[in-house]
Image (tube, rainbow over all chains, first blue to last red; front, side, top):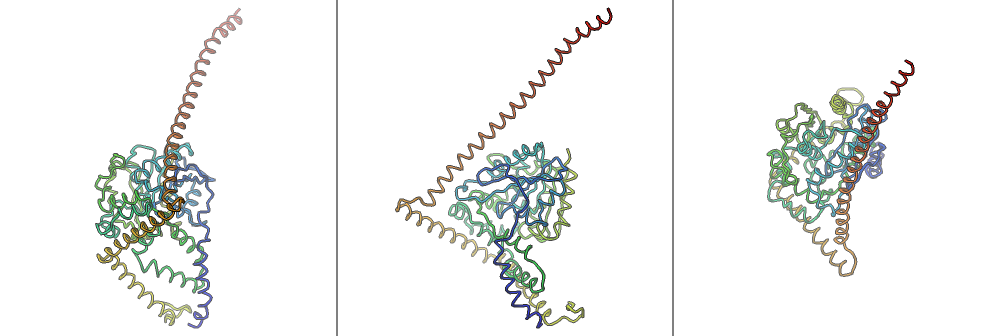
Length: 347
Length: 141
C-alpha cells in the first residue's frame, strides 16, 4: 500500500505526460507513394520488397476516422504485415472533406471515387484483378461496389466489421426515428463535424470510453508498465475525426438506418440498383464478437444474400477496432486474412 | 486474486482495486442500458438538432457581418471551393478519356507493328524462297 502511494505522484506525472503528448505520436510511418488524387480522395501505394502475389490489395476505410488505423505504428501495422507477406498494397484515403464536398453522396463514393481508385490501382499495378478490403462503412461501400460490378475487376472482397443490416442496432434506435432530424443536421453543417460523430460513437459505451480507458492507462503506468506507444497511437487515431459530407451522411442515415435499403434490395445509386445477390466475388466476412458499432448480427445477413460460390465467415473475439488493430491482431486475425488472400491471389 | 508476493491473500490495494473495478463494470452496464433508453434517444436527437441549428445561426450571422464589411465570408470561400471541385471533376473525366485514348493508341500501334512484322516476315519468307531456290539451283548446278 505504501509502495503504491509512493509511486502515485510519479505515475500521475507520467500519466499526464502520456495524455498531453499524444498529438506528437508518430502513426502511419510506412513509406508510400501518391498514385492518384481527386478532390479529397488520395490513392496511396505501399511497395512490397518481396512481392509474391500478382493481385494487388486495395484497402478502403470508413468515412469516419482516418484510414491510418491500417498502418497504426511500426510493428503493429496491418499494411506492414501485408507487405511482409508479399502483397502489393494500395490504400484509398477519403481525406478531410470540407463544406465544399457537401454534394458528395454514396453514389459519388462508390461509382466515382472507389471505381476510379480501382481503375488507377489496376493501371499502377499492371494487373487485371484486385482484392478489396473494406472496414466498417468502407466495407459497406465495397459490398455496394461488388454488387454493381459482378464479374469485374474485384476478384476477392474482404469485409471487416461491416454494417449491412443495422435494423436492430443502437444506432437505429438513435437516428432511425423522426426525433432525429437528419436533414436539419446535414443541411446546417454541410459537412457534419467528425467530433460530433465521435461523441455519439463514444456514448454507445460511455463509461468504458470516458472512464475505463483512462483508469486502465493510469493503472498500467502505476504498475510500471509502458503503455505509451500503444495508447498514444490509438488515441491519436481516435481523435482524428474528419467531417462526414452532408449528402453522404443524410443518405447513410436514411437509407441504412431508417429504410434498411441494402438488405431489401432497394438501394439505388444513380438509378443503378444495388442488389447484394449480384455479389459474386470470393468473399471473406470478418465479425467481432464484442463489436458494439457493427455487431455480428448486422453483418451476418450478408452471407445468405450474396451469390458468391466462395464465402468464408470468421467471427473472432474483439471489438469493432480492437479486432484488427489490437495487440493480438498481428498473431490472430491478420494471418488468417493473409492466408485467405494468399490462396486466392495467384494468376 | 493473488498478491504480488505470491500469497493467496489479496493485499488491501488489490482489494480496493477489485472493488472499484466491480463498481465500474456495474456502472458501465447501467450506462449502456441508459443510452439505449427512449428518453436518452429523444434528448440526444434534440441536442444534435439544437447544436446544428445554433451552428447554422452563428455561421449565418458571422457571414452577414463579413459581407457587410465587403470581406469574403465562409460561404463565399465554400462557393469558390465548390467551383474548383466541379472543375476537378471535369478534369478527371477528361484525363481518363485521354488515358483511354492513349491506351488504345498504344494497343493499336502494337497491333500494327505485329501485323507489319508478320507481313514483312511473310515478304522476306516469300523473298527468301526464290533466293534459297536460287541457291539450291546454284548448288545444284
